[in-house]
Image (cartoon, rainbow, N blue to C red):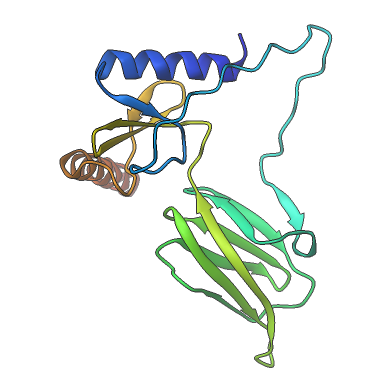
Length: 193
């Protein structure tokens, strides 16, 4: 069974175990949209086929793109043709951007949504004006929907709560509080060394 097939089987088994009355919503679907079927696992590759290798960091030339798509909580390297001096994100709650050097930008998705990216050169001239969209990690996120209430889990491969806008309030706040406490413990442990 492929990695995708294992993930789908575990996610469906998890959803059935935790909430049999819930509707499993396809990744990226909104609460008010009808539930979509989970796709069947991809067939296993031939035994003699070389495994697909994906790069750890995706690098693309800016000119070849129409809009920039970033996954939430992940960074993407973007190369531009002109030297940049100032980078502006329309809504910094959705994405963050840092200049690595004058022609290399690192964009990190913070929350789902759409905003824009503006880049100015040293003379203040606009060199980039582009739409920026932050999307969920579709291959690892499972949203369970019961009536109008959502519960989001990250399944990599075990399913754990993951906060997402639109989740049930107590579920969301509890997951955020646990994450903050975990970060505090890690910071304290790092400071003790």
